[in-house]
Length: 470
Image (cartoon, helix red, strand yellow):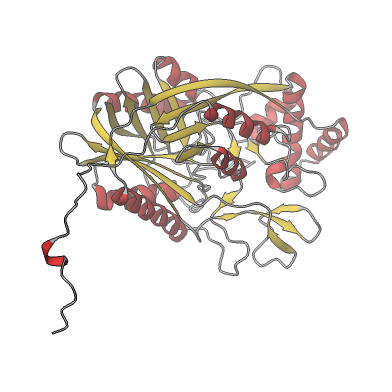
């Protein structure tokens, strides 16, 4: 028997704190909405899992280790909503090996985590998990998937010059077609109280950047609107935890439309209500029942860095000397930092997590992974329901597909070498291969059918007659 519990806690930052989402210093001007962590705790009495949605751009490097140290006997998934109007939850660590120049560029020209705010996030995540565990009760589960189309778009395009470009501009005549596909799938797991069959909460999964409401004051962007939509029907006290999908190249902006750019509260509402409404449809149609398989495990994987050439570093140094702030300066800064980072290390070790809830397999991985990775893993999976959640527990920057990094046809903003984004072109394919291999070892559980009755062998008396024509 599975027990589930939900709890949420406040992590609203303060006006004046640094605001993540750019390659230059930016600051919070206003607070439009409270930010939160949304925790789901699951157990079968032996295995204990906590899945936490965090209203932040990414999970800073100090957060997951601290939470795991406090709750060592639990598998923990920390999934950011990836909103671009949140608080300073952390960025690249300023290691001792960096030169004075790199340290200055990281400190003075790059968004950094606020130590007090990071501590608040850690405390509130731990508190939310513990409270969700205390509130856990016996549940039945329902599973389903749907699709939301017309609100998300691939921001990478094949251009007439043969290469990929990111956000080339609305209606640009040089656009040929989207470079890669999108993933419109919405996944939802419902948890229904065993005691009275009432709705307790749900886990949801979808792939879209949190950039709908990236201007103005701090807000929860489209995921917050999705939660409000679900609660408007299922109850204000129900739990909702969103696991961010693979949206490294997916946003709400339609570059092939001449409508005004899709940024602002209206578009947060458009995406959020669309996703929330689809979740409601899934919950209403799915059958409830118990599951026979509940397990989780973690596996390590080594990834490797690509490195800037000495010429690139020399050119970047000349740009920095000019001290003319702008795009050239911002990415020259990144080249210097990534040059020192990759000179110190050839790569890093990451953790892939796998969770099986009966007929559902959830694979988590760090980094802003392109949606093509999720589509490939889903296509190879034998599970009725497969979720891939990226940016989990930390980040390794963008993970573009090999095609996007192909020097003959690739390109775009996500393929730039930066302090956070520097994985080799084979990384996406290796993530697919490893995840597929992990899932191949598992046997999907049955999809709950709900209560079943004996078949009827007699036609209803009212409906067994022949046509009455006179």
